[in-house]
Image (tube, protein in one colour):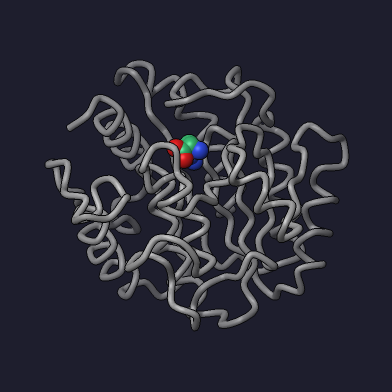
Length: 263
Ligand SMILES: NC(=[NH2+])NCCC[C@H](N)C(=O)O
């Protein structure tokens, strides 16, 4: 396993340790890197395998589900599940330093984590992109906190007029609820890559990007959204602590985010 993958596993495990065991299910991720199967997507075979295990775990759920990653890729199957409960009316709010809007062809890295939102919209990566019945089209996507944007993503954002909200703006929470309402959604899926946070808020970020949101700003935005829209599901991804000690220092801010989602 790569060092990055190991840190993401340790991070998920650390969060799990603080959650009620009866409400938690674990989806195993293969330790071997997996094969690209002649696609331009790294670890393609492993992604399909995790997708299957994740879908099976979600089928057993009878309420909305909080998926803890891992990297952002976990939102693919999680949003698919939520979209089945809200066909044609789900909005996705992508709180992330990255838009993750690549196709395999435009991706600079081949990492699926940089393609997952495009796949959720039903475009891009073949055999991973959601089918038309459950895809959430880009008209119902709101980006918040994206500030590490590749040129191909920037072109798509302009071309399809996808809203990109500045998390440092004083009325961020109001702009966010307005944007979701404008998308005509009746329920919202909240994807949170922890790198949406300012690097000063959390030490366990794989790729910290300056000028992110504070914990207070993030929890206030979550609370504002939940006051106006039913939550269809949520993801917390990208927790990559360098050591178990470092992980425990970060748990209190992460538990505050989980509190805002569930309380
Ligand atoms: N959500 C994330 N951490 N995404 C990382 C994506 C980085 C870069 N844009 C890529 O596609 O490789």
